Length: 564
Image (cartoon, rainbow, N blue to C red; front, side, top):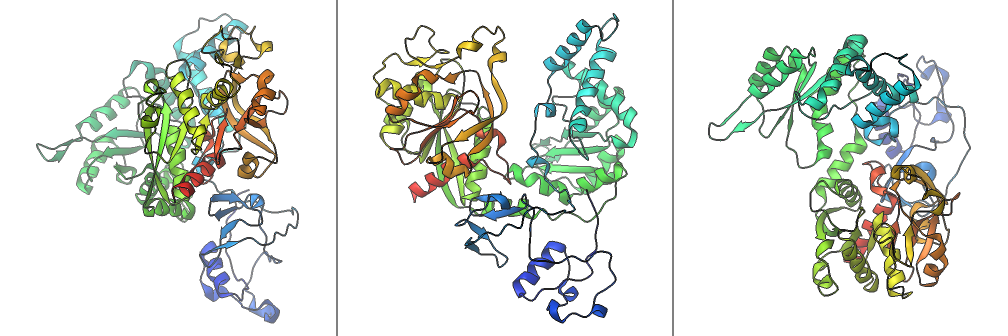
């Protein structure tokens, strides 16, 4: 439950603990009564609840370690944690008093929420749901139309996540540009939902304010026209976020507010910043959170300090060391491996360095040029992907990295590449391949499992979403995760063929993580190398600012250590 409280007094004798206590509760030292053994009844101010006992935390309390934030239940003896005097100290002992009855105060950054399939939906999914309902007879033979059937399904999908979880706000992003034909059903659904929910719904509209360098001025006409078009569809924006490359003065923002029927305090600017992680701080400074609370009729309390987030941004900005990571894949588009970029960036921050990713086109890698193609990097990621394009180049790169003991992480197809490379170059299976790349190969190191080959729908044989992985205790993976069973997000169709598992292990490829029910291999390592690991899942998808991916974090840590 959520609750408001007022601290009347506290008792503490350690000066550093007093400072820490005051910061946590946003109080002043004058409320400290000192040594509790000398406190008299009349010294205590009137209060409703008195609590005491030895210091304790809930198991999910976040603790800042040298490797990022961890739940306190995951902290182990030997870990370096940030103490109240702002220094890192080694944990020497752990005391667990068990779980007690507590009052839980919910506080989380929305970017740290674990999302599920209910948190996203596509046009295809919307239409599929409507078609299936029509075929089941849910519409009682009525003609299925965009309005109301498609729009009703959109509204249902938007609200579904709030029925699955206990949430205060549901943020729904409608992508694209106002006026795009494919977006019209969504805008109509928004119009209806806003009418149905009243003050409980807020429309935030993002627009672009271009700068004409020849004239030296910012132009608000695109914003005005965009808002007019929304209004013509029956939607009045409540908040305007103005995307701009130059600072917008107060007069210009008041002009926009007046012409677009928006309150002046509900117009905020979104300027270019060095990092996307600074955007929440900039939005808070302009009062965007307070404006939305007022619009929804919620109480505007004290402004959150966002200490962990600000600490992350500060640490990121102060990092000086540059680490070069080679991304071996077939795509050269900036957004193709965006999730990998961000995961590396987060983990780089916690290792006090800036990660500079470099795309290495696997289509152009050959046995003759591989050394030159991979030259100058501190670490390597064999990227995920589908299809044969660039596949052989990945195999060649994996061989080079393994034979030269380079810090290497394989993700998805990258993990499968590592296994195929070992099969070819150590086991001597020259035509070893994936069934995806060559159906005629005599050594299907990667294959679709036999019991799934009869499934006609290719997406029906995919492992998608969270799956358990059991980790061998004598492995590097166990040292990384610190627990025997983990859950990571999967998105793949092909698996390491279990028929070749023993042969691959004999060749030096350790299968250190497996799915407990099927025995499918999720993690492989080469113990003979300092750090050479492949994972079939997508660790970058679950990496966040406050909870960076453990395997990516360890990868970066070892790259940094190697370079030092």
